[in-house]
Image 1 (cartoon, rainbow, N blue to C red):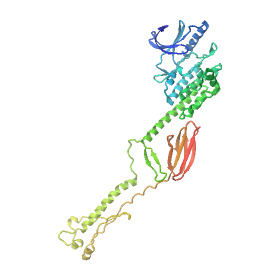
Image 2 (cartoon, rainbow, N blue to C red):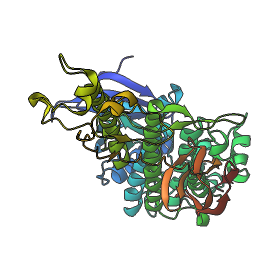
Image 3 (cartoon, rainbow, N blue to C red):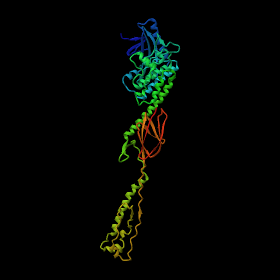
Image 4 (tube, rainbow, N blue to C red):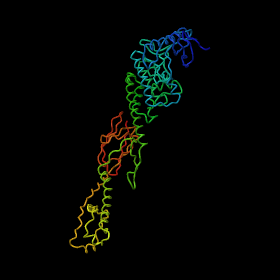
Length: 494
């Protein structure tokens, strides 16, 4: 039979079916809004049992109704209609965490941390108001379409001085129950922290920490077994999350986080580290994609390294001074040489209608050339052959009279010496193997994150190497590199 009405609420659809009842979508005509209605059937129960179930629903409304927090579902109303007790709560557009995990979606680590943080925030507020949820599990965590996380179903919530069992049965889901709930001891806020640790473990690894073929096997693991660390399933997981899960799931309540706020603070710290690490890894990947491979050595043992350059539209730097000198000195030298050759050729050229000897030694220079100075000689390094201006022939000199005026002496112009070539600095190589990751500093200067950074080329000599990971004490080592030598540094943060 299809349900059409519950009290004043008009049923418009079914949202889900639980072990204790059905959740409906309904319309509240009194204030014109859509709500979610959770019901529990009392049909077939004795009068005492029916009253007990009804009281659990009223307890939910009384506890959750006073919890006004962004990460807790808001309770609007509670009542009973025939054999059904019901609770009217805010309608949530989203999915339960159980549905998300069952879909096979792999959540990013920063998203997992954010979900756990918001659960811890909601629990911290509830505990501060003396309310313990006692049934934290993925099915009771709603992830809305806007990514807000809300804790639902305070149906087994424990108020001070109220009974925590119903007809001798402990509330909660076996795989997510704390050891004290399994043994029937009093549960407090630390039980919710244990259950949150189990939920976090399942989000990190994709599997619950306690499993078995029977209920007794599951409960025995809850009481006595320590599950493998989450990082054993995901080697890239920062070990800080191992410590958070292990502390939250400690068998002894005194060894767990005593307040959900403390767990939320640690989750926020490691979430910031994850975000920063992912951002730097993305930047390094972009650098590597834009890098150019060039050979840095020849012969046996030659190695190719990546020159990390980001392709950005930045202005080119000015060339060094010695490069600028060479840029202008070479063309100037060529021009001077050509001038010298031309001037020499003009000196040897015979004047029109005159003997060659007379023109060379006694005839006055024509007016058109009287202002032309002889080309200066160019002094070049001995290793570079340079053509010099041709001189008068021996025969012309012997035939010239003593009164002939000698040609003006050319003044030498010394070309600037070429800048010395830079002396190659001997280098050595450092190979890195860091786990899980670390920021690498050389002599106080950050060189990158390893991995992906796995090799450094440094000038030969002494250097101070430091590898930092915010989760552990830094690793430091002094090295003395020899030319063309290789030093291997292997470190694992534990």
